[in-house]
Length: 374
Image (cartoon, rainbow, N blue to C red; front, side, top):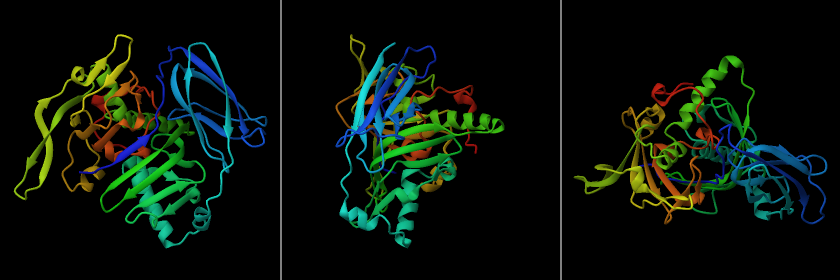
């Protein structure tokens, strides 16, 4: 069973056009000199909402659906800044972001310019565990790999990666360029374990009109069956309608005395997983490990080949709650972001299969999306 932890901070929004909207204006300044910092990208994590500071360090992000967000800015030579904000209906939120100059790490400076065979081997390893091995991942490309700092010495058996600037990822299949502010990454290839944490920002690529229909279909396919789609279905109590089945995990002991985890006969309903308070808050609080089966989309061949098994006509993922409970929103947001652990298909799909939070399928139905397409 593929194992991993993915901590991507996702404070986001509903993208329904009828929803009330707000605006954020602010300034970005140097914490030591109070001088404005121009030409820095300021964005709301895991969304398509962002702006660039002008010569006075000012920025404005408009037409933001109301809700809770994480505003993020990364600028070369400074420590990244992230701050939780709440956008309210019809209100202008004014903020000041202060960035402090980054202290040079002597160990880091000694290795950052090394580009030997080992570095390139580690780059391939990083791309595999960070971008993934799906069809979207194979088409995706890191545009600025030299910002990556590879460390395979600090922790035996592990590759630890940091980045001096946001990682620029071009994903033509989904029609996005992603700016990913990497906070941490480590993987153990031998044990097939990895974790990463950071803040993605999605920018639309210029896609020729003749390709847009295919890009939309790819986006819909990336959304359907995803963790976001599943949590939305749980919140709305529409598991069956959205193509999901949920079962308890059953551990069977084989002849080799090793245990195998399989789907049990015990189904779990959305009402069992959800706890709703009178004040309107909703919580996912089901602590037992569960298998989530998505019936309207088949596995990619690359996934089944990795496990050396036949491709299934449906996708199966293991879901474990890592905390007492997570607060759940209608659009699939959950807090805290590190509260969920997944394995199986959801674990196999990584950064190259991410979609902005709040994405709404654009015309295709889940039933129409059965097999992968470039």
